[in-house]
Image (cartoon, rainbow over all chains, first blue to last red; front, side):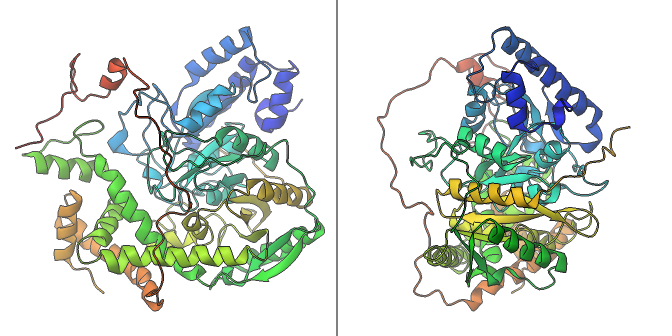
Amino acid sequence: MSDITSLTLTDLVKNIKDKKISSEETTKAFINRGEKSRDLNAYITEDFTNALEKAKIFDQKPNFDLKLPGVPMAVKDLFCTNGVKTTAGSKILNNFIPPYESTVTQNIWNEGAILLGKLNCDEFAMGSSNETSFFGNVQSPIDKDLVPGGSSGGSASALAANLTPITIGTDTGGSIRQPASFTGTVGLKPTYGSCSRYGIVAFASSLDQAGPMSKNVKDCALLQEIISTYDEKDSTSIDFKRNAYSKELTNNIKGKKIGIPKEYTVDGMPKEIEDLWTKGIEYAKDCGAEIVEISLPHTNYALPAYYIVAPAEASSNLARYDGVKYGFRSKGENLIDMYEKTRSEGFGEEVQRRIMIGTYVLSSGYYDAYYIKAQKVRKLIKNDFDEAYKKVDAILTPSTPSAAFKIGEKTNDPVSMYLNDIFTVPVNLAGLPAISIPAGVDAKGYPLGLQIIGKAFDEQNILNIAYAMEEKIEFKNKITDWWIK
Amino acid sequence: MTIDLKTIKHISKLSRISVDDEKAKKLAGDMNSIFDFIEKLKELDTDNVEPLTSVAETTLKLRVDEVKSGNIREQVLKNSPDENEDFFVVPRVVE
């Protein structure tokens, strides 16, 4: 057997069920590698001692009927974990220990998994490079000083570096798919309402979704099957019939109609992205899919609309961090002064900027011109997809307009940073599911991803297409362990 | 459109985030470039478009209003900023 930490989730589960390895051995292997990999800064909080204890307990009375029997895993630090510090990458929550568990993580523990720790992310998930975290930027295992993407950057880095066999992130505008694309891993943003938002630190409530990140599509299907449940604790959770995604996974996609939206070609897009897309179309054809040209005419308006809607919701959600009830508090001369200093010292630059944008677009006199306008544009974007889905079963696009960039390269230009999410944001605005799969590399050898967008609640279909294409692509991630001394 | 320093100070008041002059200048620069980008929406005629209110066309479920958890005083008090075994102590917020 190859090294435990490089196994896919599916193989790891099989080995545990066949009693070839114990939960304790597995957990120890991931802890050892985690300890050797601190230079990546993927963890905000390690929970290794407890993890090992839980693994020993599991081995004493193992239940192999569970889907994740004694499997250790780390999760993004945006999920509240009962008794384990949850920071959302922010100073303002640096001392917050949730007295409750998020539904998504509870679903995972119910299937036998064990928490290894909490993974770094952009502050309140606002960022595309993991550079806005109060706990420092994360290194990509792909290359030194390369961003892992964001906001689920710690998750992507930990997964690609084999510090965790699988992980979960959250995706408000691309925060699962973009880091997956940057690190040669698979990431799924489910349909809005598929995974409960209960216990996830809120960024933009009408866009946020939790989702799986994995080394292959099969693992992704298995984790999606576990985390997607109807939850009455989230009023936007939707009670629809969920597939047994991993059991029903098939590579037979003959006759599926896949749309290619002509608007997803942007100025200055590197030729290698264009080539990747063309290659992707060929792979889809090889799998027996039928390619159909489609138009999503309002694509170019998605990002500007997103930068009204998301900050507006964020400014409202983040109003709760006032230094009064919990979290960081600064000293002030009076109550207002305490509020203002707490928020000025507790939030980082990007979060403050977004709160201010949000406050401005919601302020008296500007609400109609910005917020209502953006929600109208959002409707047009959703209509575009509805029209397209009369003709096709899924849509194929690049995941990002470029490969990963160097740390510090885009930090001084917020708009150029925002442009990273140009292909992922429309999906969130329309509430659709989409998956990013690794599909090639650029000239420097950095991974590039393809995105498959589905109809609402049609996760099974995009997982199947991804599964079939993955077989043809045969992508192998090259990780050199450069950070291990 | 340009967002001037006076507007930045006004938004910072509304946001309850203190902003000194240097920070205000930087914010004004950043916000102006972001709003230049956002202004693109003005090209679109949306007069006859209904704003989207929810991506999921479902109605909220009703449930019985009943207590489902209790006796968790200890857990709830764990994040209380001041030590006190019976109460959640916060600074005075009504003046």
